[in-house]
Length: 82
Image (tube, rainbow, N blue to C red; front, side, top):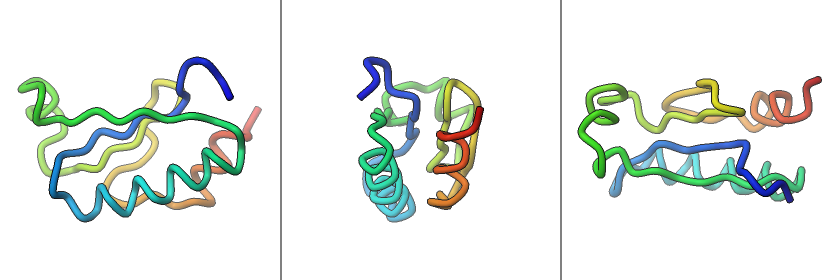
């Protein structure tokens, strides 16, 4: 597993789409030997301002990858590209 997570999930408690995204991200990361972390936007007013109702937001390698829903195929492709 990489020391620094390549995938970051921005979420908020009680968000069913966030729960769905977390399951997909965890499965794809486990399959590929990658790690991910999760940040609650509720802990940072700047993140609430930035992402608002677009959560969950997924970043891969520091770049925004997806929001609302996470496609396992797209996430897998992003993590294996290059």
